[in-house]
Amino acid sequence: MQRTTLVLLALVSGCATIARPPHHATDAATVVGRVLVYRDGRPLTVTRSGSPLDSTLYGDGVLTSLAVRNLDSGERFTVPITDERGWFSAALPPGPYAIGIGHYIWLLDTPARFQAPGPGSRCYLGTLGVELFARSSVLGGWARLTGGAIPESDNGFQVLDQPGAAQRWAGQALAGCPMQLVARAAVAGR
Figure 1 (cartoon, one colour):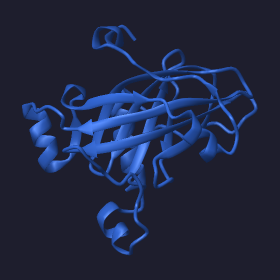
Figure 2 (cartoon, helix red, strand yellow):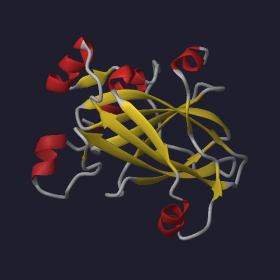
Figure 3 (cartoon, helix red, strand yellow):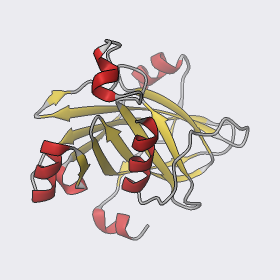
């Protein structure tokens, strides 16, 4: 199940190869952020509950993962969300990145972009809020019922700045490297 999720996440973010875990090398920057997922205005759980039913409902994989793609090199990484409040930390090579999300049975691309700073740096991206099915299309309606890829235009996105909460979660103050929502025309150019 997890391998299938990785392949699907890679395809959603325009990838023909399987994404891999983030770096742990000295050439990496550590980025900290948070993802919140909503549906019909209500927050959804981003991690498995720990219940024995989890393996039946979600398989062996995680409930929510980010698929991040370096826009310069094309390198792709998977960042599983394991914190129940949606916090994550990833060591990534410096460069510009795009974010895709896999949540439960849905996959979606986002207009969120960020710049990972130089090696050894630690920074805070912000909180990416995603409202699933904020709008409806034929493909989105099908995905709502069966799972699969949700068109980006069917979802709502917002970036929130919560530096105090990030500092408490990370245990230290972090410089800002905020993600931004990029207009669709600008996304097509990259």
